[in-house]
Amino acid sequence: MKTLAFTLIELLVVIAIISILAAILFPVFAQAREKARATSCISNQRQIGLALAIYRQDYDETNARYRLCPDNAADPLCVMASPTVSTGPNEIWWAPYDTTLLPEPSPLPTNYTGVKAGFLQPYVKNQQIFRCPSYSQGQVGYAMSYIYHGPMGQPDAFVTNPTVYFVWDHKRTPGCANTSTLASPTSSNIPGMRGPFPIEQDKTGATPHTHYPARHTDGFNGLRYDGSAKFRKYLSLDSNGTTSRDFLANM
Image 1 (tube, rainbow, N blue to C red):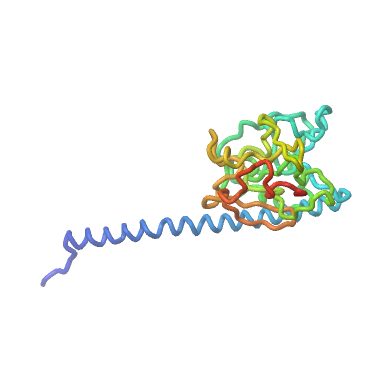
Image 2: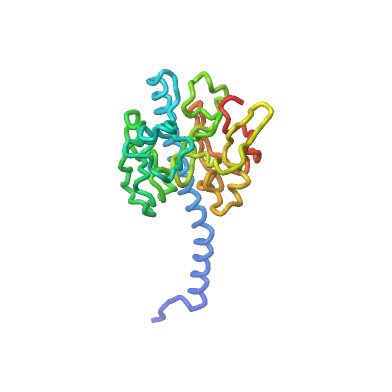
């Protein structure tokens, strides 16, 4: 009786075909997984946007600040304080974040939510919404803008640009401006404004894509003041960081 079997050549051909299919399909699966994470991230930001809107209603139509520092009498808004230094035991951020834990373990445990819950806690059901599924290196995966002429800490009537970014994907800390060491940008219509971090510098700096990360397939998700959250290619941001409509509340 003759036994049928694969020859070595046939076996090698099958292995080659499987390898080719795997090389084609694995990137597709990875993209699909990242797309799902990006969708979850957008959902997180929309929930954060709702919490910020409710907070604003509860506090006389005034927007939340990125952190409160009652122990720092010289700078109660904390705008000029270093985000990597704790200002005192009563410091509290908008999101679950604790500067006394710095430097942070990387990556953080998946069930980690931060020691201090943040003052948006009463308005959210799950602290995990502050953790982007594609970012596990920090306590919080998002940052709130605290530039001059941004929405942070301002009355609702101050904001005339509903598409201004309020919160977006970020690295390092849950607050973003980082322009205090740069020359103060000026403009004929916005004198002395402290603008957002320059987009071009963020792309080519020592730690590229920190402020506008390429977290979700060469882009990031951002929460606008009107509550909408959308994906944005960092390359589409205005390269002029001093007058970008993306970040100014009343331009």
